[in-house]
Image (cartoon, rainbow, N blue to C red; front, side, top):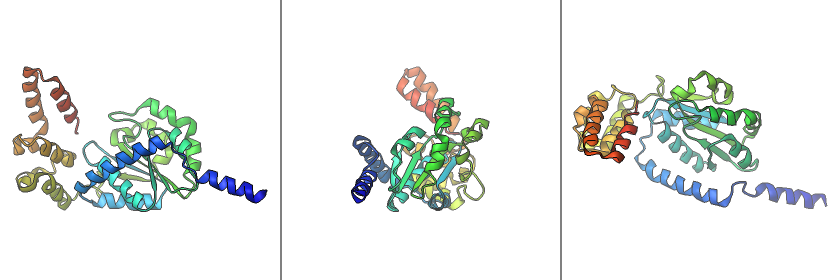
Length: 261
């Protein structure tokens, strides 16, 4: 009887804790990440984050908007999948508790952790009642958490209550992790090809240089020099023209782009 109970318990623990429909959604999202990762320039920051999450149970990636937090997060997650981890894309701590499997190598992934442009009090409230349980969960050597968090959110004094996300931090703007000139050149060549030489002198004007390269690649009719010298004035001019034409949907898109810094 004891052996039978043990066998049943083992079978139960080996079952997936994630509903099949969610696993299908995760797989679809991760497949898109793989396609996008073809255009990822592997940076020293990405290598450092990967090394960090391999060593530790919980890692926070932080920087201002447009620096490459999300791209770095996704690249590292794909590498961890190659290491045998099951990547679960969650939005709140209750899902970590619900999907935890002590027998499965699991990497819980959260982007825009605790807010986008400012800290989200509702997100903080979700973490408070289960923080201790999450702390216990990541003591399991097979379980890890990686999050990407905007710098203004991370620096908010209320973030101090999320102690486990303050210990192992990779700031992509720090001196040892920020983009090198060689990395910026590679990013410019990837998105701008032969035009990269025209703007490389402006690569240090804004921290969001990777995003600017992508935005110009998606809207290459703009004057490249004007855009990289002052992207905000270019988009302001574009918005004025769109307002005259009453192109509301394009105005909304440009409004989002103007938040790159």
